[in-house]
Amino acid sequence: MPAPETVFSFATFIALFGWILLVTVPADPRAKLLSGVIIPLTLAVVYLAYIFLHFSDAPGGFGTLAEVKKLFGKDELLLAGWVHYLAFDLFIGAWESRDSQRLGIPRLVMVPCYVMTFMLGPIGLLFYFSIRTAKTKSLDL
Image (cartoon, rainbow, N blue to C red; front, side, top):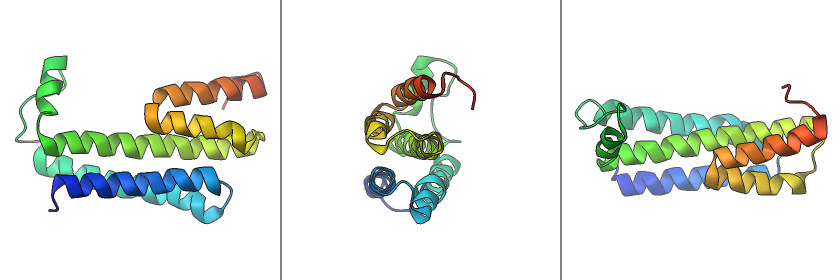
C-alpha cells in the first residue's frame, strides 16, 4: 500500500479535479460522470481499503469525542476521514450542480456554493439551499 501522504495527495488532487470540472464545464456529460460518479466512487474505494485494513486494530471509537480523537490519532484513519470528506463533499457539489442546472440557477451564482461546499461542506450545502429556496420558494426536491 502506498504511503498515507501519497494517498492523501492523490485523493486531494482527483477531488480538486472534480471540483474544477463542476466550475468550468458543469453541463458536459463527461464532467458530470467524472465529478458526480467516478471520482466519488474512486474515493469511496480508497476509503473502504483504509477502513478495512486499519479500523479493526485501531484504538478509540465513535462513542465519545475522546474516542474519536484517539481513533483519528492513527494516520491511516485520519486519512480515511479526509477521503470520506472529499468523496461526500464532491458528491454533494455534483448534486448541487445538476440541481441548479435543472432549476436555471446561473453558473456564476453557483461558484461560491462550490467553494463553500468544497471547503466547509455543510455550510456550502446550507448556502446552496438558501439560493435554491429563494429561487423555487420551496424546500421540495
